[in-house]
Image: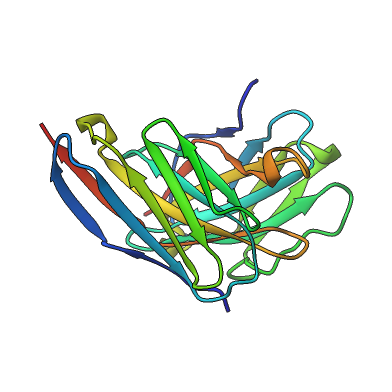
Length: 115
Length: 113
């Protein structure tokens, strides 16, 4: 596809359940980011992948959050034992070093609601 | 720690007005600065990106300026239209390896016909 895609677009889950959110970056983009946008708050950085380097996990809010990127392409963000405060829009972005000055291109997001 | 502030938080103008949205950041050691548009329930649309070595970028009716030394950026929208109504977000790309974005809370713009 031409842009970043994310699935599902909406996810409603019960407190305590695990969820997986998926991101397909732009083909060939080596960098992939996850951000979270909570109601009434700004976007916050969660995690960054670049090629085969170790990911920067400094933004993950707790050890219930994890992410992987397989084959340098698709990424999955997993939230275990979801809590109501995890409700937010989760946005994925990708970029390519040296292209358009590392401009980040965003997917449409996954809206997660934890009941 | 980099912090990004956007003023005003909300703005309502009649159609046709020229307007300025402001963004300030606390640490001048940035890699780039991006302005985004967010429509309700939708994703982010990149509007303009300014490299740290640049002073401004223009696209159509939009002009973004950057004064890195004073920690400020402005987004100028000329001849505003109702279709410009959206939330405008400023994001600073950090210098360093990951270029992660630090975000302001946005300016909610309403352009009235």
